[in-house]
Image (cartoon, rainbow, N blue to C red; front, side, top):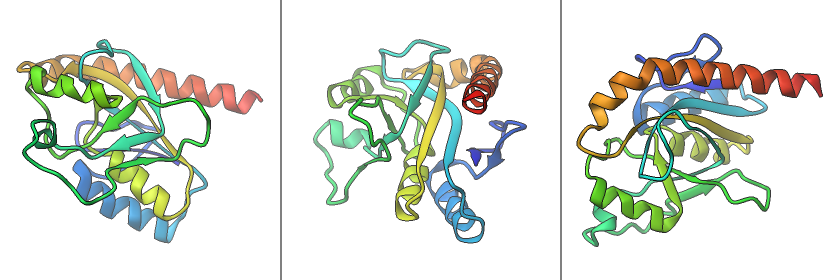
Length: 180
């Protein structure tokens, strides 16, 4: 099953599950309870902490939920804040999720020290629910912006093209899989 956030980030081949961690967690849980999929593939846009370039396509099965205050030493969590459905030896680029968009390049670039390369608001919730229901899951992302003071403007400017690139990428991957 292919899912996406919703609002202005929808795809004709994907079911919308909501924006942010809470809506996504509620709706993916509901989906898994009533129509448990064999696999969950989340498709969406992402911001880059510095290494991934605009319009890069990133595939990952690993997500974190790390707030910026952790990076400055102003917070901690007793919760397990990294989840992965990756069963291979290949290390994923970690996708960070928060209900907030990072706009401070200096602070957000510190995520790179932890192997966290991009941010997407929903992916951690998708993987956490998939883990709970023992469903294999992954995500495909297109970079729309860097996590800096221009994040929102760049997202708006690049969003439509990113959706087109994601659509093409997912359609090509489906063709590859069905050809096997």
